[in-house]
Image (cartoon, rainbow, N blue to C red):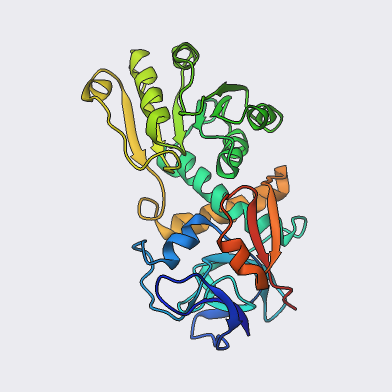
Length: 319
């Protein structure tokens, strides 16, 4: 079969032949139709993530959409190494497969899985958001942030405040669930007055996709609000910077609760449940992320793409 294969450590995957996957007990074989190329997939492929330690050769891709031998259409997660999602066929635990709604196409389902799960887990599992609360999404103009705006509203947020640098994209968020937007300059800074004004009105949950200077500014604004109601700050991504320098007084003088969200902080069983909810919510409310579809043979072009927006989805034309 054809697949996106890493043949040597440190090398990018190439389109080539690979052995046919044979299911073990408790597994199913999936005829893959679509698999999204995510940053998480790239990190795992380079051996830089604790959740994956396979040696080459192996197929890249952590998930996808396809059909089982009996024709049932499913979303699948974490194929058994050395097999992966970006292939014509793969094998995966039957517990890591779920039915998907007929009303949503394969490309859309594959594209929303990773950013949708990340936002849903951060809000529901980590922050334990309650319907009627206010959510601030830092870095809402990327595909993950745009998905977070939609999911926050779906889960019952009374108000969603979005930050970002691209003003045109930022304004477009008002049509998909954002109630207010705050622009950031090239360095990621916003107006202190705008941020403090939002916290004065009350912010309950912050989803941070950026880290860096914008996160420090938001934490300082939260501290300045001097409220005693806990503000749950959930760190999801580090697009702007991997580290911050934060004065201890910011935490001592406020009710900020800081936590992370991702593989390692959310149990796999919970992730599977969230993905099932997400797939069916996509049919109910039309969750959407901008996508770019490429044939699996163009994995080299996809792998070297500089931007994650729109989200690249590889298609396999499976039977």
